Image (cartoon, rainbow, N blue to C red; front, side, top):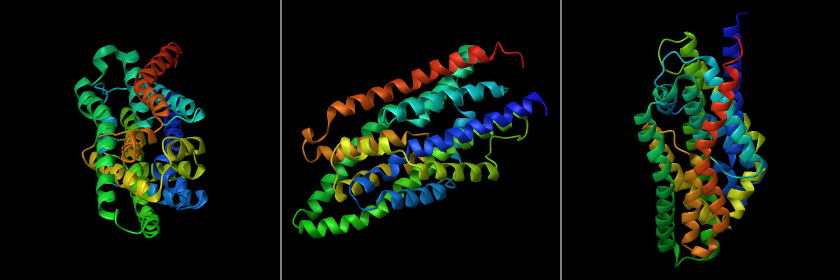
Length: 332
């Protein structure tokens, strides 16, 4: 077995590891609210979420193509660059998971690609226009959109049901939240699974095993299975943060937050934008909570979450730069 084939195998293994970690790190995005409102028991919620994450992974490949061909301008990317990008994202995901901080796996991976690309060929390696259009602008606008849509949708629901019996409202939305959490799981699988599909396709393309950036069917299936397994392993620290520490949720709040977030994520997925599902659902929860009163949201915790969001890309750029600086001096 040649050394280059061995490195390709290691890159694919790292990509699937990233997908698995993404699954348990971001499982809170899909099931935190349905667990916190006690609509489903945690074990049932995980199986339910994992099933819909798996199905969502087959919802197109627009985001995968953005990752595989829209971040870096270099066509002859070495496998070592891709591996360093993945390792940087994995390291940051594990750090934020350990401390129970919701952060973006998408931005971690993009930051890793940028950092490794810069270390490999300097500033000309990065597709700045593509990053601004499909990463930077959505990074700042999507949380605002999540907050506003969540806030507005919750106001609409309150206006529609405010004269109804509270017990009946609770029962209705406990059932409706199964639909909204399913939408959230599907949308997360649709957007996030594609990021690993894109990175594996990039590795196969650079090795010469595929001739275009179209995602092979076997890559889609492998990523769908790995994402679902990651979700089934659970990420309980982040689930507690998302489901109970930002604001105490009732079924109507969970329904409003999940429906708002899922609609935004699916729209971005359609246009090939690797959106942060964490950003969207977090700010949708904040928006929904703010309809009660601003003090209902624990803003001190929100500040720590925002700090992680802001730091994710630059930290992953730095980690990938450092990793590639070490790797490139190793004779291969």
